[in-house]
Figure 1 (cartoon, rainbow, N blue to C red):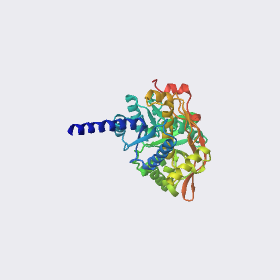
Figure 2 (figure 1 turned 30 degrees about the vertical axis):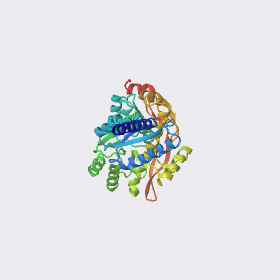
Figure 3 (figure 1 turned 120 degrees about the vertical axis):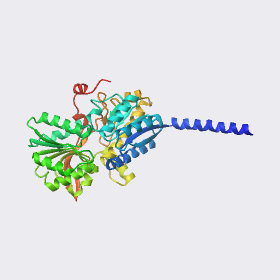
Length: 400
């Protein structure tokens, strides 16, 4: 009896193991990392976006018949925690690729991990130019339009302003530093008459808006470049409105037209700022209509820019995995370089030369409507129209 019991138990273990292997073979796992607890205004809509995409991919048959599974981890806004999460996803969960991240310094940390461990990484949101250029590597691709691309879009409008004296306000970490540097470079190239009269570098998430506003006002600029976002932006706008900083001054601002950053300003929204953003209520294209209807049907809410980023990150990952028909990193790289696919903003392509996608952004101006901030006069700028030449990219990016 004892021998029979042991044989039965052993057989059960073998069968369970076979079932586990079969289950593993019927799934493809993606490891997703983001700053959920630190930046919920963006990352919660982002999560909803990628969850909708997972549902759509699996409803359409998955990845070449295999179910797509996303295993998500919170990095808490800390680069070291993001690398730990990446290691756990690769070593314990056996994910086929890594995806996500928000803050630029975290994106660079995960990109470095991916390069060292030879793991495919699809960076969703981090905007620093270093991701695809100075610190670019063969294992890292980026979805969102970079600082260079968004700066080039904004400079196109900013250069038309008569203002000659400019000040800048930006968070003092990789993203803010990168955005200011490239905006100044591109703006000065178009307008050599520009003077940069002041720079303010508040710590990310901890702006003391009073002294910042006072210092900028003392420099008496004719125009201001703003790169703050989230709670810092709300504090800056409130203090700036109170002290009249924005009165009769042009303001150019990265990201401010995105609903997650514009909505909290409510009736304090300053009017006439030149911004990049996402006017979901004004986009009339079949690709966006399809996404909008699906998102609203699932969540009974309107999308934010994070929703688009999360959705398209998983749609892109699925397209890459399907084309590669493999989880081998080298085959994933080969499949992604030059790959084109649809998106809610129209067709995009991952460039072979620098692994940057050609997803674009909307540029318009802030306005008040029914006590709420909106974007007006917005137009979509294709990412492919705002990238440097291949010859310039080759100078910026190290050889693999």
